[in-house]
Length: 397
Image (tube, rainbow, N blue to C red; front, side):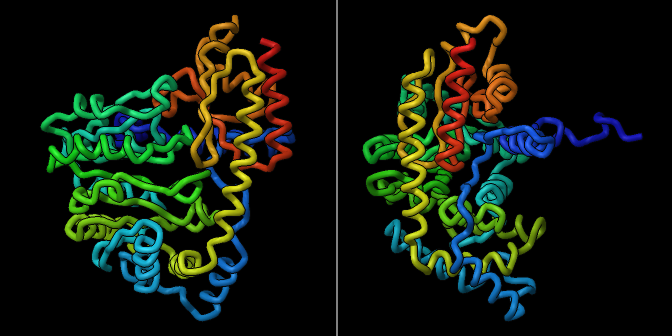
């Protein structure tokens, strides 16, 4: 009989995604008849827009059901190139684009293509849960820089400089951020870029998956404010969040052709091409009417404002405004301290699940204990009910 000792050291040093685990538990409780409001899953509650679904149906009718090129169809790659030019003023050629099975897959491909045992990946915390574990899968070492609520969840140039060593290979930045909803402004991005310019061996991975959920202002990433990083910056994005296409599994990466070619090689020996039908639909999504994005983002902003105001009424909760996404990341340390039977954020989220029947993810999953992540990708009615329940549960403590 195979035991845990027989498994690879690789799989033993990583953990399952905690956000997916919370979502699965919430679904189980709902299936058992519990009235659970799920603030745990990072997935738009909107349906995929009709014109995108129609394109997929048309693709099936036309027999677009065969293998495609590993790195994506010419039509989708062209749409991605046009998107970068239109939205970000960035210029790419087809051999600088790789289409993958989601943005997570793009990050995996990048880490697998670049990292060797002992290499270091700098990850600002709070971080998206998968960054450190994907680095570990690639035998690399995640180096965590913490930036709590006092820093508005944003690292400083001095922190970045101090974290860099000769082993640093990749720096990851996610703005607007999962789990905080906070975005770096132009000056902050330029300041981080000024540090990185002096370290030409470091590749920058900018995860822009929440680009279109920005509540106000023009989206910028570290490359758009510092074009000098073009030859060592990988821009990662996808269709999941902007077009409510999480299950369609289309992400993409753009960057130097040599790095993209290496990522393509990894993908060719793991998944091959992404779903042909999803690629066809994403091409239509990128080239078509973008009004659906504005409709969804407007709804997220309304929910955000309601939640922020509700948290202000709850004793012990400190919550910063988000700049975008559908997340907020309230500090619950004072709530935990006040409670006699709760010692940490994991126990607190369990209490909220049992007492308030509201599911959320503990901040420790994102490298920041004492916080919780709220995903308000649910209807306003559910948001209002959930905040009422949470207020009562906190008062009960």
